[in-house]
Image 1 (cartoon, rainbow, N blue to C red):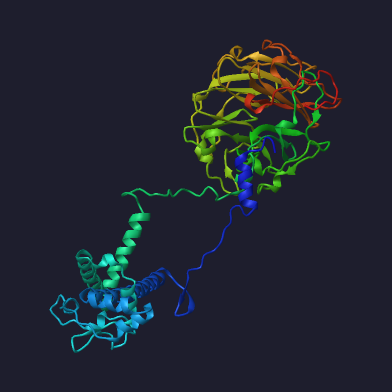
Image 2 (tube, rainbow, N blue to C red):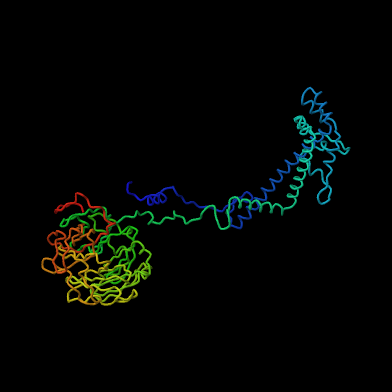
Length: 570
């Protein structure tokens, strides 16, 4: 389909079809006519025995051919020595068969043939004439005890087919030379059959020749490249990289939805239901991540669990999701309060990156990211918390940024991250913000640069943008400065995030209503102002949080986006 990722489609074809298949190979050989399962040593022995048989049978075959050729050359030499008589008999015979019978019926004298047949072995021994005779050749043919030669039927037939040009002196020399070569070949073949060690040498030479032709072209190089198998597929290889909106409700229901299901609306729109919740539940966490991204899940008891976005169950806008207690071995009374997606290079848990955490009581802590690279199934300790305290935020930092803490009382404190030294996972942390009685920290932000703005939102749906430059740096542990003016209209501050003018944000209510809107439509005001309407709330509902959408995660806004309270998709 249009928009599909080719690599994922191919991986599914490999996994679900026979485009790629797996089969077993048994190391079985037929030994003495019986199949036998062999180990490597057995297979090598069987292979070498097979090659010995092949070389031996091939040598016997070549020996038979060489003997037959030598026998024919002897007949041609006889004919050349008695050429006048041969021509006369052939010319006087009425038919070729009669001539052949006549040639075979009489003995022939040939000094040339006697010289050809008179040989000694290289070691000085006497030559056995039977070693050079063709198989199944009757004794009456060939050189007799009287020194005369009798032609066989094969020799007579070759003589009848001999061309006249073979009568020249040069051709005679060729016949003698070829005969000597054939006899030398016969000697060599007989030696191979008599010496098993020569068979071993031949097998070794042939394997070396195969290695030279089909093996390495040069030292250290291969004609074929051995690479890691790209078809060793895991479940993740079958998952299409997709941007997802992941939501976690206060009572622990988690689900994911494709980001493409939402369109941008203008400020003040009513939005579309994002998730169904019970009356006493609301969406507590929301973020956008890719299906192949990692998620660090921190519980209210300071433990951390590891998850991937594709493992989060997908649901429709009207579904509640799946209880997160079914995805982690949570203890009684434990719930996930903070989720932290890891994207890009952070997936490898580099040691020069940190997890900066903040709790509702104003405690902050910085821990190296690689301390979280090997979580156990039962979870690991991320931070030791005081009784009644819980995590409200966690970010990945490089140790050199400014950190901002916001309380629900409308105060904010900004300090340099270097004021907080790195601690291990089991430490408690240090004081980040002093709070008045009844107040709590609701947001932790890590400032990137001075061009950003801080977007604050209150529980009654109001909010504003304020330049980050208006938040001056103070020491860690102070009460901070005014971030947004509190009033009966606004209510408590429920969220704060860093944005640019061209960003978009997701607004979420405690009833599960989601609105996506542009930051540019929210006026930039000073720290002490009350702000403008961000979302139209129904009676009894409150704004529970907001999430900034990174530009490359968001789809272009639709031309027919509405600016009223209709139930248009967001």
